[in-house]
Image (tube, rainbow, N blue to C red; front, side, top):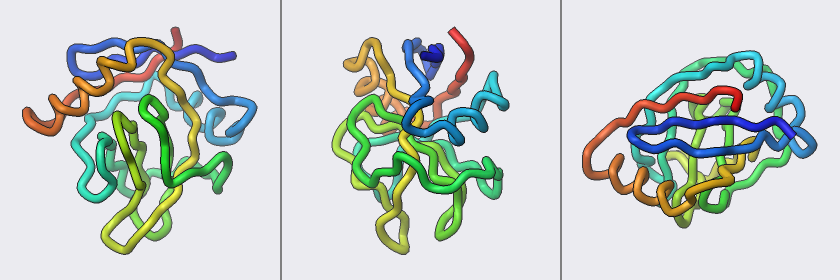
Length: 137
């Protein structure tokens, strides 16, 4: 099991890569570590934060994909109907864009401090974009 450290805003989380369920997505993401971006609150999907990544190409298709990630699950949408993005659910999410429902590859699960994931989501909603960094633990 590959473990990650995620630092988002003032919070730090332990996480694991879902290498058995999403091997291609995990391999592609691992090649980009450390990965830094900003999270902003989602527009269409509910209680989540996302990293809009434009036309960044992870060169993966769908695997272990879902439209309903649970709190603490992180999904990668590889692009197509909408831009490439990574989404972190902190509550109820129905992953979508202005054209309708999407599905993303569940490839990371946060394993510590899930209550702080909710705090991160609410902070992002009310205070704006927060820095985020993924690195090997």
